[in-house]
Image (cartoon, rainbow, N blue to C red; front, side, top):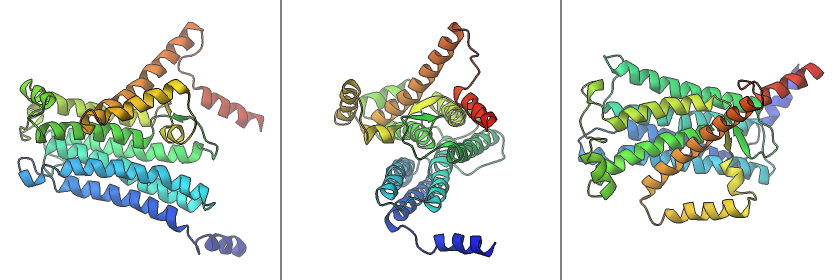
Length: 305
């Protein structure tokens, strides 16, 4: 017993410097995003950029999250401490921060239990809890072997979708002279009306609430999504490379909030359409459409023991 305790304590005497700093940067960005959301007040010109900056911090956290594990493996310093710290940071940056940003954008003020506010409280808590469950499941199921797919929408992907929508809304409010922004405001899809109940919510904010719930459910689903990190730093086919170059080139042609909005929405929609196609194909072949092949293989492995 004492030998095992001493062995565990020795693991914590030295820590990898650079990977830990990258993970700490991820966590710092998530906390900063929450503080930006808390500092936002609708109608105050000095605060209008707070939600936009908060979303930018979430995307910066994704960059830290993409590199901390790769740096740890490159320097042979990967270990259970880094994996646990990474998950804790991800809960804040990709679970709590996006949920608070959505809550603040829709409500525009602190509020929890008044009429109408309870719905936003439920959506905020539901998203954060689903993100935590997603990360816990990933820690149990994943292996060190690089795979091209995620089982369920990854938490950074869900955060990118939610924050992409928040940035799109704020960009339209901050730049009403833009052609797309003018069309959105003139059509009534986006309004600057302050919160006075659920009836004051414009269609875009209602859609944002629905997107937040959908992304939370997709995180704990079995819908497959491509591993963006392994794709960017690995090898892909010629045609996917051309498509990636066109997407990156569009950043120079359009406002980047629009690119993030349509890009993240397309990423999530592609996974849904692909999952629906697989269900249809299994149904045509007479298979059980509700059966998860990965779980069935895990059960077989367990019985084989």
